Image (tube, rainbow over all chains, first blue to last red; front, side, top):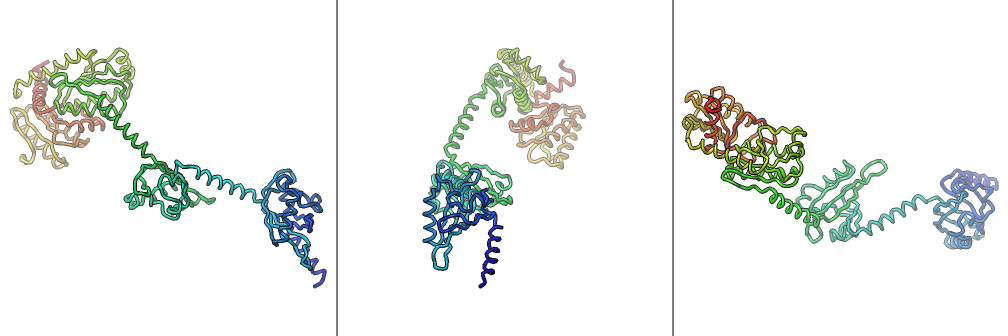
Amino acid sequence: MAEAGVDSALTAYETMIDSVTDYEIIRLDPEGTILTWPSGAKQLTGYSAEETVGQPLSMLYPSDEVPAERLLGELRVAADKGRHKIESWQSRRDGARFWASAVLTPIHGHDRSISGYVLVARDVSEAREQELAMRSMEQMLDAITDYEVIRLDQQGVVRSWNPGARTLKQFTAEEVIGHHVSMFYTEEDRRSGLAEREMAAAARAGRYETEGWRVRKDGSRFWSSISLSPIRDDKGEVTGYVKVARDLTDRREQEQLVQRQRDEILELSTPVIQVWDKVLVLPIIGTLDSARAARLTESLLERIAVDQAEVVILDISGVPAIDTDVAQHLLKTVEAARLMGTTSILSGVRPETAQAIVHLGIELGRLRSRNSLQDALQLALRLVGGGSADERVNAHA
Amino acid sequence: MLEQVPLQRLGHTIIVTLQGDLDDATVERIERAVTDEVAKVRARGVLIDVSGLAVVDSFVARVIARLVGMVALLGAVSTIVGIQPAVAITLVELGVPMDHVHTALNAEQGMARLRRMWDDTTGYRR
């Protein structure tokens, strides 16, 4: 083989190396002195060939992280093992650092002795950041014990499991990873394909929140609040889902208790009193919201039907303020009572209430009103008396 | 035809009972029977009993309004009795106009009401 041939091959080789930009590929002598400085190395570190060729390799590494002695040690390891990987910080010319993944390979001469090294390094800062972020994310998920935070793949198969999920569902990671999420659903939800519908809804809307019964390992049910979000790749395709769930059984029971108590209070707060034969009084005390007004109308009409009451007195002296809504509720009640054949009398209208009603432009129509309950009762008795007087004649004329 | 429509006569009053599902054919039959009867016996009042209707929608409300109008043209007055609580709430919530309709709790009070209305229209009172 001719010397010229070797030279030209070498030149071609170095040209090739020089055209590699993302890697720092440098040749070192047996003592670790930098011999070549291709453009990739320049680009990565910012140093020029003049600044680096002839300098020790240690100039590329921050001395506080990677001291020169350690680098010499690394060279020896590479020599022994034939190939050695170093992951560490490297310095840039501007003083910044990047996380470099370098492979050190010894070059052997004809007599098997080490004639130098090749160092191939690249910037893996981003990958390292991602890995660290991923690891901290995992640690974070592991630290969450009150919430189930799990990952599902596109088909709904469980791919990750956290201690919160374990607390909630009693399953260990080994028992669930690789299984479809519908294993936590009730039989009927499983049959109806609820899990698939929830995932489809999450993919459509970007997030899906729901509450429902889920099943633990021991078969017991719990009321769960669930939030499902799709994971998308760079192209926007859904590649999986993150599911966050929490046990709401206690809260649900509390809510039901509160609701029951509220119902009882509503019942208590809408008493209908029969004060005379065919005369009912409905004292309204406190604020009327729509739920209470509906209940009030309902219980009043039921009583009208049962007692066949001809007159009802709606006493509003206990209502702190009359606004449009309250007035509408009252008028609806009066109208419904009228349809049943019952006359309503409003009582207990205070001066400020009278002003408010007129200022609000509320039309009370034919509704009779009396200032006091006593006056209202007098009117009611006259109305009832008038009716019964007529009834004495069996058929009209 | 008349047998199929539940009509009763009590003195000068005709009692009509509306019940079950009302379709167009039934409504027409009732209208014909009521108007024929009012004209035939020169009735003064018509009592329309709807206590057998669990549901009163705007269609039924229109039917009642039409019946009331026909009876008025024949010179008689009418009253609706037996509107159930749920029906009353529905009518009010739907906003079905019922202003022109006179109501009473039951047949007894309905009769009394018819009599008062008749007196009013004939100028016996006021």
